[in-house]
Length: 164
Image 1 (tube, rainbow, N blue to C red):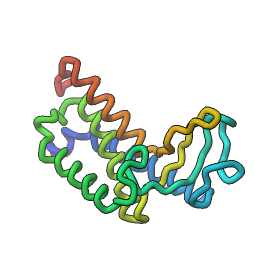
Image 2 (cartoon, one colour):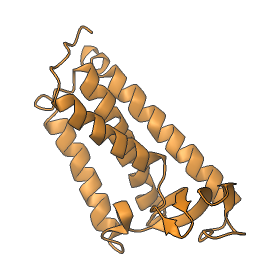
Image 3 (cartoon, one colour):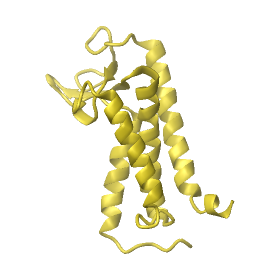
Image 4 (cartoon, one colour):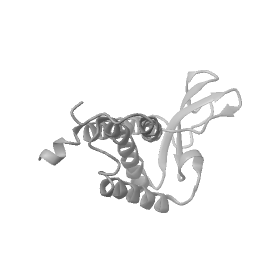
């Protein structure tokens, strides 16, 4: 029980990201039909800048490796196992590592659920300026991206002890 408590930040944040990801995807899947990308089929939140859409992404970031959902699911599972195996060298007991990897793990699990459940990841956040569209993404993708960014940032700083 003590070993689990040592990772409470990581577990709590991973569960929070996972829950937010799955709830938001559920709401989008119930509100917009798959393939809703352009007006009037999407929900324009800020016209010309931000819309809620419903697209299925069989790839990874920016639709890389599209059409290989099983391979990407295996990579996600391998990443989770690697995080567990290398938890000591990744210093997962440190608070800053728990923040970063809680976001990453919650995001990986959120997208894995989609891949196993439907063969693609539901993306729904769409930012654009006129005809320039940033690739659509979701809460899980945000968690992974922010977590990786935090880990890189923290790697340049002195470690904070576990007691902090």
